[in-house]
Image 1 (cartoon, helix red, strand yellow):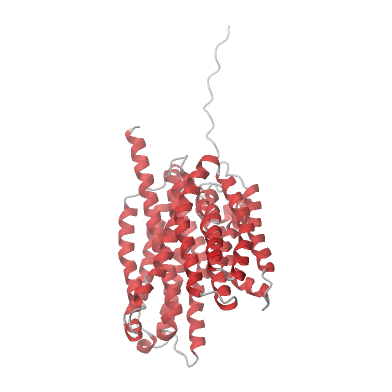
Image 2 (image 1 turned 60 degrees about the vertical axis):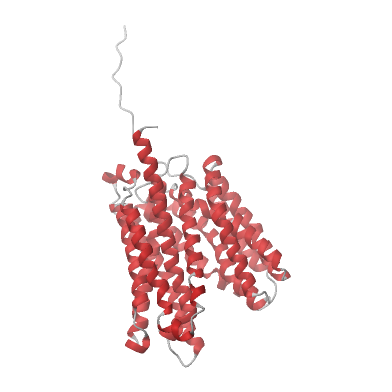
Length: 435
């Protein structure tokens, strides 16, 4: 192996590790807000004579982050396609870390009145803007550094970072539950937010040592002046395909939001048991995602994505039916099979699979905007599932709806194709003399 090849492989690993850490930070920061909104923000920032009104107001600010994500995808996608992936990723990481740290230092409603919830919402908007550009940019930097035969495996670690960040965001509040209510409300709730600053510093140091994407550097002289305009005029088919493929993420919302709520509130399933099933599926995903990445590099990303999406079509019925049985062992089994194993196939592949559908000129904008808009639908899918129940016990309409989303993703993946980058034309050879 040449010195250059060794350096390239080392840089690819550093890019993957930096993306893994960045994804941990992004999802940790994004979801500790949700935990805090459910536990303490209604008291600290939205005091009301009606406790339910305060809780709803606090949880509404959690949704603000999702609304801001497509705006962040458009903004940072434009910058990423114009000035490069690395510079934008440093910005998104700093923005996320700064917003989260400020939340941990904010005075409460009791101190500054209505300014407190206003500042909290502003910080949440910054988190959402950052999240809209962070994960896509990190996936592109990793994929464009990775060896050609290992792109799916390298980018699957970005998804593992998201899983790890979600686990940490949930786990960090467990020891805080041992504090008295006075301690939790006075200073305990701030600790998870301030811990984020340490993770951001470490990740910035790692990312600072990663070179710009070699693919972007090679095409830097040919950057699009208006990536979003070019994308919609020339690569709109890829946008629609990726948007439809990204609907598969609704499966995660089905398990982690609708499934948890429906099981505990409507099917008399112990909440702790349901949380244990979800936690077990997350651990299984940490193992399965890199394995599916390696497999896809050998037999093809499209094949694994399609098979995984079709598997989710059947898996959602198994998951919903298991909840109606009340059998904890069966629920854990079905949750691990669907969320931890089957869903891990398309989830592990999307960073590299989607990116290959766009040319380098509009890749950041195309992947970012298509996925973030699709994620909004996934965010509302639990509410749609409850609407389909209609207050009754017939869960089959929910299964048909979620299975249909997975089927749309599978069909979109079937008709997808990689972007055809213009190949350099060979130099004309002089005509040979004949005679």
